Image 1 (spheres, rainbow, N blue to C red):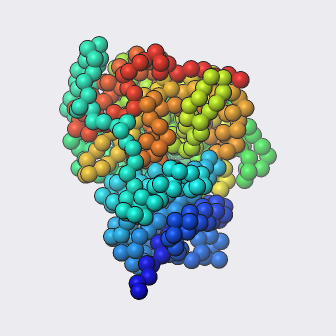
Image 2 (cartoon, rainbow, N blue to C red; image 1 turned 90 degrees about the horizontal axis):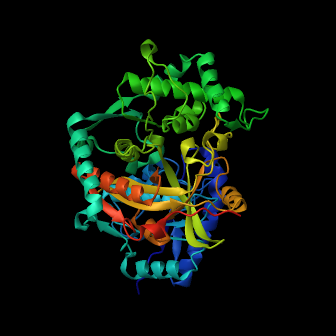
Image 3 (tube, rainbow, N blue to C red; image 1 turned 45 degrees about the vertical axis):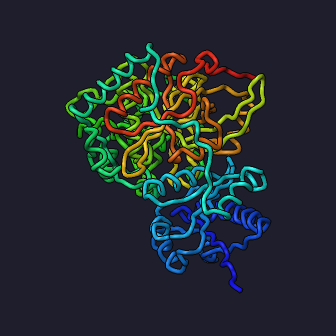
Length: 551
């Protein structure tokens, strides 16, 4: 009689010990829930690596530890990667590359613990690496959706999700009134390929996001090239910005109505000194982008700079907005005067490509080109004043432009970044995203090629108490967007999306949102990206007008 070996469970974590210790109880709770769910289905599970009592957690917390763990794993035994919190995909990628049995990635459905963010990063990294996997997500793994998925994986080694919302652009025909923007998009793509542009990369490979690195050979045919810069150069340039210049930026923000919540303890509170240092980073980043001729830049920050200076998010949010404190560069010349400097957070180069295309298209259409990436953090169905829809929480660590907020800079607040991730503090750029139409997208690598998913959505204004509840359940220091994705369900988004990040840009109304989407999709297609349309992009425009909901 043969005994089926237990399904193995591994857990990838952060590289920061403080984060791993803080998040370990949430991981334990997820694993207990998952083990119980598998037991109910008649299958035993076993953890593939024991917790480290001295470290105070049981995560794989580095690539070396990952290699050590996977040396002891039989590649023919089914494997579950359980993700309750943010994790570095690089910690487990090498081991998963050689695994031959079915792989299941799964996460909790939680706002407080960003397992969904970690899961989407892992899935995007596996897709880029060409590793076969299945994925599932649930609050408690007792719902029918999760139970069916687990049973399907146990029975056949894979889970097939509904992705009928996604279809190739090549198979789509736009109505006559959109064809002008299709032509303009192709022309914009041809111009970029001929004229060429630079992505300034301040150190590559942030936070284990393998999916965020675009190989050079995929960029060059687009006319895009990396200007590889060092964060040490950015830090050195920050030291050359004098206090008076940074204070001028600070006064500009205060005059626009931005508030900062200061406290007496720099270890726990935001201080004015932290804000001034963050504005030196803003000035230095803009100056270096100009000096090196970069069309967009990305600062890694989370590794390296986090140990020597304040967080980069205030600087990043300002860069992404054409309405920002003026910067004087080399020779007393204004830097990017009246223009945004697209910034791709955490050096997510896929987001950098996306932001650059957005900037070109929105500028050509005379629309506000302010753009940002958000984490796909969490979401729930909302029942309030006629709304009965699934509303996502898109939330990034402070780097959204104030032009996206209700009341702009007057609606923006700076708060100290959480000490667990940001030991030297720094200000966020926090606000509630204003109601309106958006185009959302993601550039990613799959099957050895650059691809883009693109769709339409609306930002809704929820009652203030619901916004506050969602902030309490996630990260209250960060900017929040309440997003409805047209024609895309929760599970379709999770099944199709290939990143923890989603790119968003506003349009004044539904018709112009469609025009921008058509032009951007055509530009991407002209550049050689494989473009997938997601959800409702051109049907019943009146029905899709984003509504404003008040308490």
